[in-house]
Length: 154
Image (cartoon, rainbow, N blue to C red; front, side, top):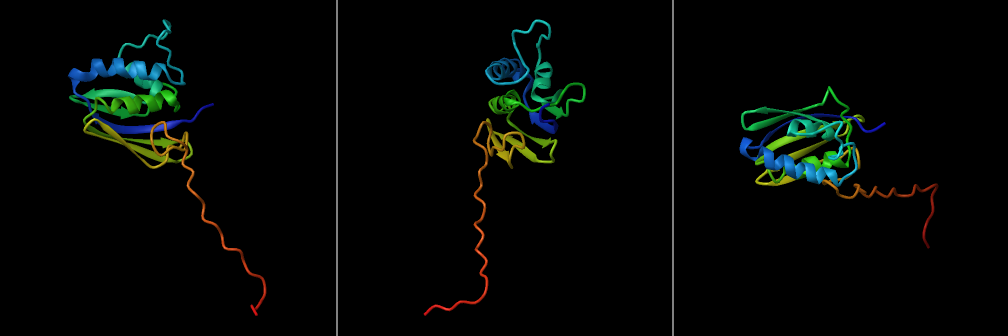
């Protein structure tokens, strides 16, 4: 069970900031729903790459850039912890984009710039338009009633 996702992206995270980012991400994810448990001694997490598997992605460093891809070795399912991972990264990433494609074909994108994060499109897992936002409840257009037959006002 769970909502499977595919991930692709590149994020500029200076190597010097990776340790502090890892600590902040660990703390942010620990307070959210998901499989990551910082107290689990059986599955120790000691790097950003280890932590990324709990956010349904894999991370490899390419110079100052993080390259994100679908976690083919793990179980790439979305959770609140995945949302927390991407939202907290905004404090540390100076630029980049991540595209997430859900198992139902829905796609949403996180764009990072100047310590901020913008979500484009609806998150297929929870229906939100922003991380930890309310589900998108776009009002459906009201259909005009169809008239049957002729009538005339007097």
